[in-house]
Length: 320
Image 1 (cartoon, rainbow, N blue to C red):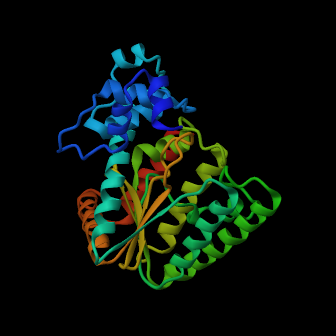
Image 2 (image 1 turned 30 degrees about the horizontal axis):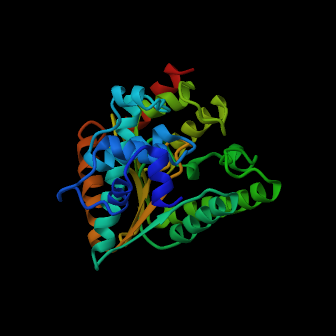
């Protein structure tokens, strides 16, 4: 749609639409208002105008849609306000990190998306390649990784991601996962694995308060029991600490030359990047320091795996 027809449809002057199209940065004087911006975008007939316009006005001046604006322009809220604010802040932080690292000559940034089954499978193939590199694995994740699933889950073709639905796709996913798990155990004995998880998230995972459609409650309990078994079998090589909450992102690194920052906790209806891959020392070191600080703090009450195992046993009892 050209500027003229869009201006007519939105009830604006063409000069206003032109000003929106060439919008300067926030620190410079702008000749348009929030109202004009909302009118212009609403006239585009987007599928979910409330969500898109909310994101745009947040980027425009740092404030999401007000209830007055929603009422005036008939824009329904698709996500609760509290969650919307958290999502907006998360999106801005992701953009911030991505752009700052991208501009830094000493670091590289790559965003990874997946909208199709093939793209989803490519992600897991990429993870296998990264995991085969030498070095300690460090993981900051709300709940334990699928690499610690017991054989009763991964060999029974359970825990398949939603986007993988064809028989061919499921078969390929299971083959990749089996290779990842075999590689994981081989590397565990040589380099080790250190993980930080969230107590309340594990409690929800075990109790079924949150939906994990790819696994039954019994399978989730078997997963946590297997995590305990791994800690008991490999006390020096597999170490876990539990915390009350994580920083903004989940992330993992293998060796110290890259970090994969996870954005997969977004609601499924928001199509954004799934992961950001940051390479180079300047990109990785801040995450490494953050991990070590949280690890040291958690180790004050959990100096060894034994204390963690006791907490997990209690969670299993509580949620039985």
